[in-house]
Length: 117
Length: 112
Image (cartoon, rainbow over all chains, first blue to last red; front, side, top):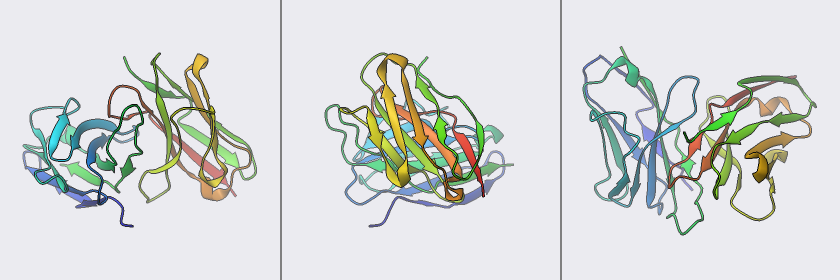
């Protein structure tokens, strides 16, 4: 079946612009995650949704970062007043519900590469 | 601080050589462990995972990993690499809630 899709794949923004990154999870996956991957680093957790509820946003680096998933499917990560340090690949992942101690496998999308000039 | 360490950032091997990539994590409780792979131009894919049971886990494409709890390690191995194994490999741990914590990655280049 279809995997996780993200758009746009590439985004160039001028410093100070707002950007919106979209994620379409795998159908039926109620859990959705956003990660940020800086050059030469592993992905770092930003935020987590279970259906439309944002249960963990501890990784969002500042109040310029905002994520939503209003209908429990598609999610949007918004970055306001972008800064050069926001340049990174933004990854979305989805999974079946987390149950008990069994961590369901997270499936990743191709990412959006953001460059802030 | 919670962390995952991958020992080598770049590894270069010839085809048919054996591979072992190190991964250590800092957490003393129950963990779930993963290796993800990212082939050039592709997205992150799951290679193998450990939740419980047999600490020797077999994954796709002939890869395996061994969980050694006393050493806080989850090293990835393959007896004979192929040129097509050229990729970046990430170790990840789930121990602190829903999120995965990743290592910095190891770039493997296999010379044909």
